[in-house]
Each structure stands twice: as C-alpha cells, then as structure tokens.
Image 1 (cartoon, one colour):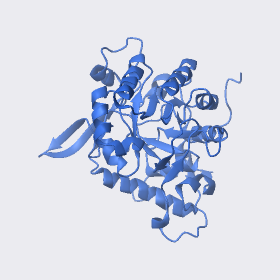
Image 2 (cartoon, one colour):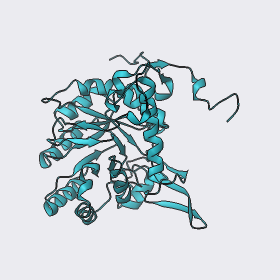
Image 3 (cartoon, helix red, strand yellow):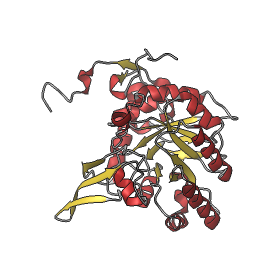
Length: 356
C-alpha cells in the first residue's frame, strides 16, 4: 500500500467558487427546495436539504422550528420513547422533517422498535457513530433497515469511498454522512490525527454515491457533515456535489436551542453546546464514562443569535446569492453550474487593509 497519498486534499478555505455568466434576474427566483427518491426507502422527500445535527441542543423545539422552513432536525439520541411518542402524535406533519437518532447500541434499536410498536410509525432515522468504517457498523445498519423498511435512513460518519458504497449497497442506508473531525465541537483530528479535508471528501464520496442506482431516480446520496464555518462553506459543499448539508454550530445559540443558556436582565446572551462524544455528554446521559474512550469533542460557548427565522434567512439568502453568481436557478443545479479555483490564504482574512 502506498504510505502517502501525494494528491493534495482540499478543504473549504482552499478554494473559491468562480462566478459565471448568468441569465437570472432576481434572487427571489431561485428554487431552494429539492425532491429526492431514495436507494432503499420507498418514500419521496421534498424540502430544503439542510439538516440540524443531532447535537445536545437539537430537541423538539428545534425540530418544530425547522419543519416550518422545510428543513430537517436530527433529534439527539437521548429522548426516551414516551417523549418521542408524544411529539409525533402531537405533530404528525413534522414526520418528514424530524429524524430520530440512534447510536450503535442494542438498547437504542430496542427503543426505536418500542416506538414503532406503540405508534405503528416508521420514523426517519439517523444512525450516528464517530467511525462508520467498521464492518460491524454496516451489519448494524442492515439490521435497522430490516426492521424499518419504509424509513429514510442516514448513517455515518465515513470518509472512505468504499465505505460509502458498502453502506448504500449492503447496509440499507439511503444517505451517507461524510466527514470526520471537521465539526466545531469535534476534536477527533487533534486527538487521533485522522480525517480528510471536507471539500475533497464531499467530491469523492458524492461521485461514487451518485454512480450507484437502484431503479429510476433512486441514487445513492450523501450529506456533508462538519467543517461548515460560514454560509459560503455550505455553498461550497452543495457545489461540490453534496445532496444534504448537516450543520451543528451554525444553529447553536438560536432561540429553539435546548440547553445551557446565560442571561442578563432576563435576556439571553450566551449559549453553551457540546458534541455527543464528549465526556460531558456521557456524564449527563450515560451511566458512566467508558474507561476505554477518550473525549472526541469539547464544549463551546457562543453569543445569542436570535430567532431561527433570522438564522435561516441569512443561510438561505447566502445560498440564493451563490446561485445567482453561478447561474443556477435551482439548488440541485449548483453542482452542475459551479467551478472552483484553488487560492492562497489571503482571502480568508476579513478585510486586512481596513482591519475590520
């Protein structure tokens, strides 16, 4: 095996999207909704392909708020069965936009099976582990698929293209989460030295996923997860071929966040969130900290960002502007209309002349 891959892998800040000639007349004409068929699930999904990650703050309030914008929320995996039953009974219209998260535990799957038995529902599912490259993970995903034939299943995380193909073909997964170590609360790259720069990861895995077909318009799909520091990074992920983009820190600090708020004079000022692989999360939700595991995440405190409507407007407005710059009238055409140029690092400085 070649010890070093000599091809340079690229991250979002290594490139810019090249503006193209456009016949579009207004940002308001851009269609940001997509419709998908899936490799395994018989369902069709329509909406804006942005997903709130299953981090500590992604609870029912976030799910309800994002559903209004036709965006997805992956609930964190520590909701009990009764809470899930109450939510879906009260808000059945949110079923397409709320994914139930589970990890690689027998008890997680049992909770999901109990929910199905009580409600008769097959919710959409996010199977989330730090390292999705293991053979046992593929078999576990297949087990979930066998029990939930209708559900849209998103699973990961992986970077390796062969793992993406295996999860799609043999694991029963519809959407593969790609990216390791790039998240704002993730310390995997510092702790383990493992990962691949996210832009290259998206481009390579979208290529192999889209090449797989399981019937008319039933392609393998991917979700770029981690490393999106700006709306521009989200645009780059979509231009690179990602079908969905998962965001954590971008939504942290907005009104629907569940968790640790700081107040001044009864007004929200700061919010603290953390990854679900942190010792802090284990202390809160697990019986004990596993002595064989290191903490691959950290706690982060951010300033209050306001309503989810304000956050969504900034996000969707940036995507619309990108579409105008490259002549894409529809979000699904971003990857077809875009071209990247490699750049030096000066463009990452914020107005270095004026120091703003």
